[in-house]
Image (cartoon, rainbow, N blue to C red):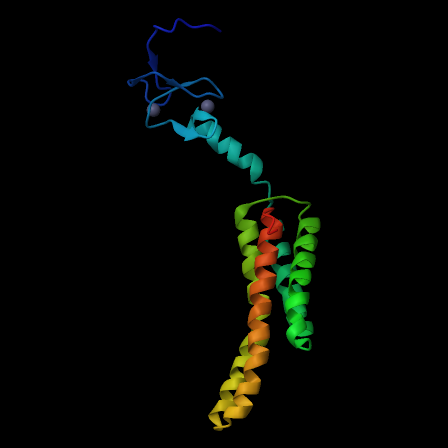
Length: 181
Ligand SMILES: [Zn+2]
Ligand SMILES: [Zn+2]
């Protein structure tokens, strides 16, 4: 419909406000307060919201499933890597990819920023029990005044800490679709 451009427009939410702006999606007149500047131009709040919803497709069941699987798999992975020493650095990103792919399969690739963040948090949490137990172990050794033993106890903690970092960052980047290299 071609409207006379000289005709005064009024915001569809605030009918007493005259405006020159229209939402570039639904074409409704919007005042400066109701307009949101998007990469494609000004849009009304309704259109911006429905646009975001399209990309947030996760269902409520996806959350407990993703969290449970990521936590359990991360714990299992930290147990395996506690035998691997230096090779933890090679295996941790692989475990991260496996966790991300299982989560993607189980949630049928549905997306939501919060889902990715909670899955990553669960991955960190799942790796913590072994890290914490090794920390306690180190403190006990140091408590006996055995500095050499304490030094030896430090390495497993470094590997375990790197495991947490590598596995969690891989899961997050893989899920949110950001490529690292
Ligand atoms: Zn609109
Ligand atoms: Zn308005």
